[in-house]
Image 1 (cartoon, rainbow over the protein chains, first blue to last red):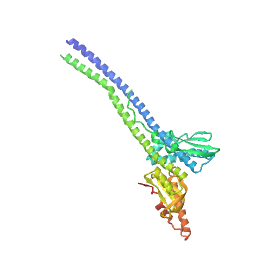
Image 2: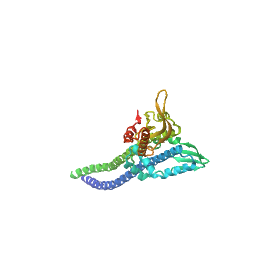
Image 3: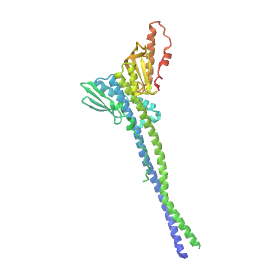
Image 4: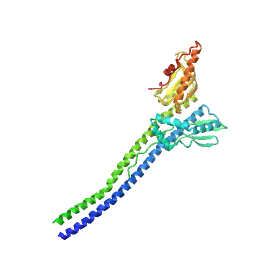
Length: 185
Length: 191
C-alpha cells in the first residue's frame, strides 16, 4: 500500500475510534439504567413473593389458633347454636387474645418479636373466620385450605367435624420457592 | 513509514475498542446478576427459615391441641390420658401429681396441658395410685397464657394443702410456695 492509502486508513480509524467511544458512552448509561431497572423489578417481585408467603402463613396461623379455641369451646361448654355464634364472635373480635396466641406460637417457633412485629405490620390479622352459615351448618376457616364444620339441628349442636384441623399439614400449604435466575431484559 | 505505523496501531485500537464494546453488556449483566442473587438469596433464606420453623412448631402445637380435645371427650382416668399421650406423642410421657390431682403433658416447654382430676384411686392388688374423674383440661399454654396456668396451679396447690392441714391442726405454715415449686412443671419428660 502506498502512503496515501495508509493516510486514508488512519483517518477512517480515527473516525471509527471516536464513533465507537461515543457509542460506548451512550451504551454505558443505557446498560446501567437497564440493569438497575431489571434488578429492582426482579428483586421487588421476589421480595413480594417471599414476604407474601410469610404473611399468608401468619394469617393462616391466626385462623388455625382461633379454630382450635372454637373447637375446644365447643367440646367443653358450647352446646347451642346461639352459644356457638357468640363464641365465634367473641374469639374473632378479641384481637388482643388472637395476637397473644399467635405471637406465643411464633415465639415457640423461635421467631423474634421484632420479626413478628414486622410481619404483623404488613399482614395484620386474618379477616375471615366464619366462612359459611347456612341452615345450621357452620363452616369455619382453620388456615389456608382448611375448613372445619359444625352442624346444628333445632339450635343444638349435632356434630363437630374438626378432622381437617387435627390433620392439617401447614408445611404442604406454605413452601417458598427459590428465586428464579436473573434475566437481563 | 510513520503514517503506516500509526494507521496500523489505530486499526489495532479500533479492533480492541470493538471487542470492549461487545463485552460491555456482559459486564453489567454479571454485576446485576450478582446483586440480584445476593439480595434474593438473603430474603429466601430468612423467609424460608420463618416458614419452616413455624410449620414445625405448628405440627407440635396441633398434636397437643388434638390431645386436649380428645382428652375432654374420652379421658376418665390418668391411665386413659397416658394412652392418649402415647398415641399422639409416642416418645414423650406426661407426669402425674397425686397431691394436686393433676396430670401434666408437656410436648415442649411452650406447649403443654394440665388435666385436673377429682379423686385418687388405688389399685387394691398393686397399690399403685392413679387419678380418676377428669374435671378439666387446662389449655392456657396453648392459647398463649402459660403464666395464668401456673398461677392457677399454685392457687390450687395452696388450697389443697390447706385442706389437708385443716383437720389435724390449725397450723398454716408458709410451706405452700416451696411445695408448689417442687411439684410444678418441668416433668414433661422427653425420652
